[in-house]
Amino acid sequence: MNPSRDVVNSFSTGLLGLALLVLVSGCSSLYYNTMEKLGIEKREILVDRVEEARESQDEARTTFRSSLARFQHVVETPDTDLKARYEELRDAFEDSQSVAEDVRARIDSVEDVSEALFEEWQEELGRYQNANLRRASEQQLRDTRRQYATLIRRMHQAEARMAPVLEAFEDQVLFLKHNLNAQAIGALENELGRIRADVDQLIRDMEQAMAESDDFVRSLRQP
Image (cartoon, rainbow, N blue to C red; front, side, top):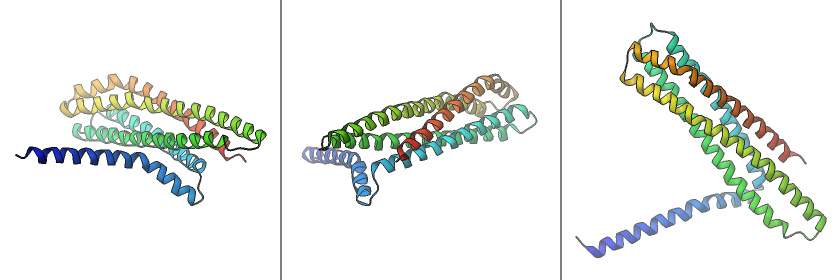
């Protein structure tokens, strides 16, 4: 064992980790700068990402509704093979988990570009020579920030609703996995009402977030 080599290796690993951290944190800035050189401003990127987040929420709404129907189907078809019922519930849970992860990623991307846009917008206010134009832009920035705050709050509210539904789905799948019998289906049936209520609330929150996304995109696209 060579202590000096261990120190060097540890130091190198630390430098590599730091370099990766700097690289990751700078990726967004590099991307936005490159897109700006291509004539695509952060405002346009924000619109695109909000629309993509809306699409992912719409897909999540459809998937969670479908998954609930599949859980309902398993409960209502007692003559079906238990293993087949377990596999159907497992697939429903995995589909729901996948769309939930996509929703979270889309929200993160919206927050990333919005932060960059608002920071740039605030900095540019100090470059105006015309006081009237500066005040108009400052008011527009305040209005956009206020509407964005409502939008992102709605998005996170809907995102948070996914967690208890996913947990309930997973609980049922795990229980059925190790209890392939009629009692397990009965336990699922007892929980179905609560799961349905959670999914209904999730869908309502998703629809509110989607409506807010539409309003926000329209406001940014106004001349």
